Amino acid sequence: MARIAVIGAGKWGQALHYALSQKQECLITSRTKRDIKNFVNLQTAMECEYLVIAIPAQQVRQWLKDNFKFNNQKILVASKGIEASSGKFLNEIYEEFIPRDNLGFIAGPSFAAEVIQGLPCALVLNSLNEEIFISFEKFFPDFIKTYYSCDVIGAEICGAYKNVLAIASGICEGLKLGNNARASLISRGLVEMQRFGEHFGAKMETFLGLSGAGDLFLTASSELSRNFRVGLGLAKNKTLDDILIELGEVAEGVKTSYAINSLRIEHNIYTPIAAEVYLILEGKNPQDSLKDLLRT
Ligand SMILES: NC(=O)C1=CN([C@@H]2O[C@H](COP(=O)(O)OP(=O)(O)OC[C@H]3O[C@@H](n4cnc5c(N)ncnc54)[C@H](OP(=O)(O)O)[C@@H]3O)[C@@H](O)[C@H]2O)C=CC1
Ligand SMILES: O=C(CO)COP(=O)(O)O
Image (cartoon, rainbow, N blue to C red):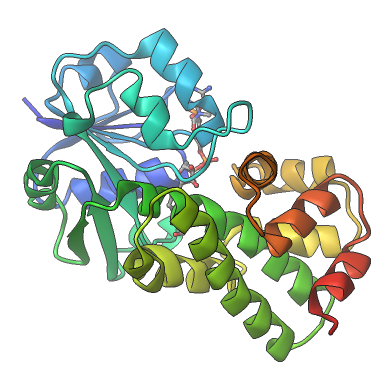
């Protein structure tokens, strides 16, 4: 009997399933049935001792309410985002359903499209309980180097915030503002997300490592990123609806922009780039926004 299962067979769930199938049998399940080796129903997956959950951040609460039965499973959360309706981080939502000692959170630069080809990458497994890291690290294949961190909130904020910054970077690219502008935006974005994180107790070093700078540099500089592609579409004055239909996959930065906007107002945090992304999503002209951000 397999001891580990992935829940959610989107891009990231399938890539993690591929990776976690290298050393042992790994089950996978999803809302929509798929022709994938070891695809099982949800009940069978839920019987595993170890679960990796890769569903969009905005769906997590409802999914947990409707489907999850806690049976002392150890869980790695693979999603990146902040719940827009409440401004809650994913660790806060999961902790409403599962004891925190059973929870871990994946962070770090990891495009599913590369992981599923077995290309090397490094991930951080974040948990307040180091035993979660020790339990899960042995499941990962040689091409994924894993690190431990206890800075759960830092990892959550990095993974969510960099998606919003990737939208801004995609806009900058789409408007052909040049490499200098993009590097300015990304590095200022790193400072911005660190300032936001500090407010919630995140550690500075998390922002300088794989979860922060690592994932931000990756996502904010590649068309492999869905969030970056949302930015490219916005720069072409496409409607958000058209962009998301064309994408056909989740771009977490869109809803997370709304969450960050509410949190920055509530907590009075200076987040100029995320604020402009929010305004663009609400209809501001991207060119005006980038001018407002980059001019002296
Ligand atoms: N793709 C990547 O490179 C990476 C993605 N992530 C994060 O992983 C998460 C998932 O992303 P990804 O897999 O790429 O997204 P996709 O859009 O490829 O897939 C999302 C999957 O979530 C499932 N899903 C959607 N809504 C629900 C729901 N209400 N209940 C249950 N399942 C649902 C769908 O399953 P079904 O198709 O069966 O309906 C769908 O396949 C995101 O938070 C993303 O930021 C993190 C690192 C890398
Ligand atoms: O989180 C990711 C890579 O680490 C994937 O980013 P996108 O969702 O923008 O494709």
